[in-house]
Length: 318
Image: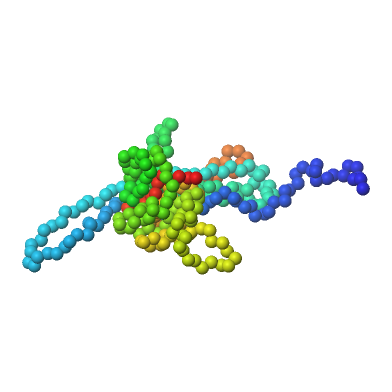
């Protein structure tokens, strides 16, 4: 049957509300495993400083009866520091958009702030796990921003690097490491070596944090061929989430934001996020028909004792 002339159909309609779920699913990854596993602290200056120390190595200690005392040399503590970094996200929403009946949210500003807060935490995770060197920044114009030294800039004691790595590539104390000229595949032998080194240095690592490609390689380690696991009859076990080493069990955690070529062996007890200014939302002065907000945080990374953790660096990423 023919359609009656001048019937107004959906094909020509303008302004129809889309068939959207009132729950908007944010598919952007927002997990921050490193931030989530480590502690928090308070920074009291833009240069957060702390002291590290270590015990003397064990030695033979048998003394003669009645002998006079000989006094041991005192080793001074080491003073370390990391600069705070300011990270922010800004949101501006027109008055009309805020007043509208928007699909999936009651308030456009509230939705955009929630989305921006997730993005801000991802930016923080990227900085905290990265290899950018700490820098004091510079005032004036144009000036430069302060940057914190990320996780990779502190690891020096228990490291495995690829061939062709320049001398001093892991300078520590917030200095950026230099990547090796030659990459190599992540192997169980390399991981075992770094875990053992952490243990020998006094650490008790509990976590392996690695990118998605090398997470798959760990799941394919030969050691799994002799494993015996109880799994549901309707499940297929194709991944390893726990590694049982000679020095304890370590959780294997995938990370989307740390560098894929770096496999971290971590003792989370010795790492902290120190906040100089905790997360805050600021209302920006209104200068037109729009609402403005800013999300801001100032923070740094505390490496209380990097010798408790380690890294298998320069891994291939394919």
